[in-house]
Each structure stands twice: as structure tokens, then as C-alpha cells.
Image (cartoon, rainbow, N blue to C red; front, side, top):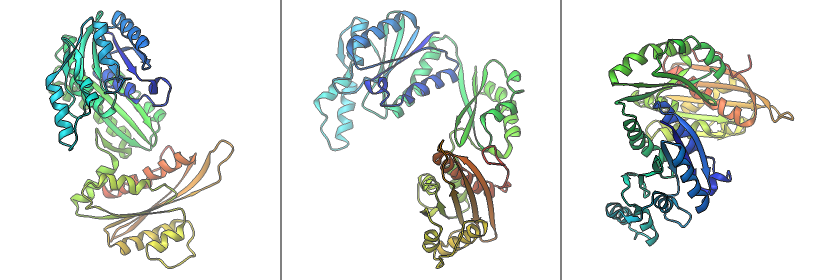
Length: 420
């Protein structure tokens, strides 16, 4: 099956908006064992779009169109799809009623131009959108089956995952199930990960593909599997999963859809424990991630952010102006912060950056300290890189140190990203 992804919109064509929708769709299709042959981007121009639909319909078996389903004049997908398919637009009454109910539930009257979102090519297959106002649809154009999806990322992702991919798998004539197993790690670079797992891929069946996606500071290692049943996938994936866990060891933060911060918050919540944080020169990223994960506000007590040690100290109730950057200071701040906030854990991360060179790279010394009622542990390190790299790296290192402490793992294991 030859698949084309066709993304629409002037903002995509001009680069004003980064086209993350394409990358998501291509990855999900590949993970499901479906091959993408072409990727096309077209602006909001009738002639260009019509030509793109025609060309895609001549060379592909399946075309997934993204965008152009909104209520405004530059949203052209329904109109041009109907024209290319040689049919008229017709009102989808059920979707119109849902649109009206959507606005009514928010105390608003539906604007007249939203009726456009309920106009679909005659005879097309309706595809539901449970979280938005732009429904999808499928229609034949030329030799290809076209699937139209909304441009809003969260709506597109749900539609592609839950509705489009199952339809495509059915079109292949194969009764299959798919699974994507994901490992999120910190401390292992992509090159070393590939080296660690180089002997795994030859052992994998053709139905399982190993892949990596680096998004510093984390590395995502993926096993995309296709099988005839869930039990078949379990059996096929188990040896590879075990090998990855053994090779990556303590560097695996979490798996599948879980995040590092969610793991930390859930672990603390189960222990009925609270935490306060203090950070210098990390942009408030540590507290921000923990606060967002602490959905009920029961774990994350407070977060103190500053660029100056003495400001951090005064906020934590320390009345001295003579503190200097270092391990002793970080440990002292962690102890005082825990006592001052009456929390079970206190996490302190101090970053001292050096001036950047001509390439905007610099070094940074990092000291992490975590205080509990029983102990204070510390983790010094040195990172090299630009401001954003150091901020992201120090944040991940601090959260990883906390994870390691919570699970009785060594917190001072050297990682690929620090200067040895």
C-alpha cells in the first residue's frame, strides 16, 4: 500500500508553523507497519490544492490530508475534495446538531460560518472527532482513498490513532494488532545506545522494528511491533524489552506514556510525602514540571527560583549573605528548605554558568542536593553547551537524582552528557 501525507496551510508552507503533524503521522504509520511514500505540503490556494489532490490520487493508494477543515474562507478541504471526487457537498445533519450542542454547552450561539464544517462530499465516509468541531471524512479521488483530518494537533492525533490507522490496516486485508513499546532514558547518548543494542536488531523478527528518537535531554528507544494477537506481541516483545532494560540499566527513567515527573509525583503521593524545590539558573523548569504533574496539589509544596544564592537563602529563612556556590551550600540549603517548608523532601539544584564563547557554548558547574529527615545526598556535575542545553540538562539531572533516591539507586553515576 502506497501512502501519501498531504499537509495544507499557508502557515505550514511558509514555515511560520513547524509541521509537527507530518512527523507524528509518518511515525505512527511506520510504527503500524504502513509505509509512507510521499509527503506533500500545499498552501491555501484552490488551484494548487486541486492539482495536489489530482496528483496524489493518481500515484497513491491512500492519501491522508491534514488541515483545511475549519470554518473560515481559507479552509478549502471539503469543497475541493467534493470537486475532485465529482460530487456535490451535502449537509451532515448529525454533525451540525453536535456543533450546535457544542456551542450551547458553553453558553454561546454557533456562528453561521460553522455550518461549513458540517458540509461533506456526498457519499463520503464520516469520521468522528470527539474533541473538536472539525469532523473527518474519507472519499475516493482517482485511484486513491483520501482521509481528511483536522489540523489541530491533539484532534489529528486522536483521529489518526483511533480511526484512520485501523481503517488502513483493514484495507490491507490483514487482521493485525500493533503496539509501540517505548523506553525513556537519560544519560545515554544516541550513538552509545545504538552501540549497546547493535546485537539486538538482528535477533528481532521482521514484525518488530527498533528505533531511536533523541530529544535532549531524553532519548526515546522504540520497539514497533505488528502481530496477529496481543499474546503474540507479548511473546515477541518480551526478550527485546528485557535486553533493553539490562543494557540501559538505571538510565531508564520510565516507559511508554509515563513521564519522569509523573513517576516522581506518583511515588511521593503513594508515600504520603511532600516536596519543596529550590533552583538557581535553571529557569524554574524543575518546579514547573513537578507542579504540572501534581494535578491535585497534594505533593508539590513550593518552588523557589532565583539567579542568586543569597536570594534563595533568604526565601528559605536563612539570614546570611555569605553563601558561596558549592556542595556544602547546596546541602545546607536543602536541609534548611526542608525544615522551613516542613516537607518530607527538599531538592536543591544550583547552576553556575561560565561566559559563553564565540560559538555561544559555555561550561556550567552543577550541584544537586536532596534532603530528607534521615539524610542529605548530593550530586555534583559539569555540563558543556549553550544556555538552553545546560538548563534542560541540569533540570533532568536534578529530577533523575530524585528518582534514583526514591528507588534506592546510585545518584552519582556518570552520564554521557557531563564532562568527565
